[in-house]
Image 1 (cartoon, rainbow, N blue to C red):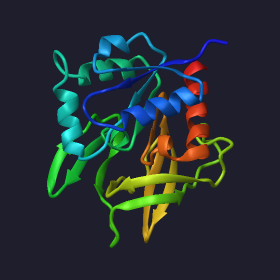
Image 2 (tube, helix red, strand yellow):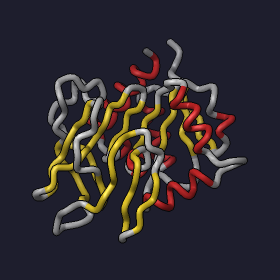
Image 3 (cartoon, helix red, strand yellow):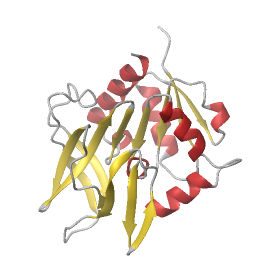
Length: 209
């Protein structure tokens, strides 16, 4: 059986090697590259991201040539599978607001990434995720816990999407989204043990479908 061939975009932000290792462990053939040309013929793409929304958007706009954003727009425009993780999830939304500064996101998903309305930040550690029955991403995982580390999130429903939620203090936060070929997680599946491995297997099955 041929292993699914997926790429991880190295644009200077993300938990790259742990993401690559986690994908390899669940059976993927992984290419890590900062050159989009190395990734364009693969079956799926993982978009990582850590740190600030604005910094990640700046990095996506300052890649080789005209930056990565035109290529990512083309990838998504062709309906090709993409998995965003952490800030790689956040930049898929329309806007991010940090310290009073609004930054335009990729606009794939409607919504705004804002500071979590909670006293204790960051939201860090293991937390359960409430998944809808129709979720393909979280199929077979149940109420297992995933690893989070973030102070910003989306807190509103996302139209035409399958959305999973988590709770931090009194704040109900978007934990994961399935929007056509785009899947994204606020948590880190590559740091989430067996539950994260199951999610990545589900994504690879989706990539190969």
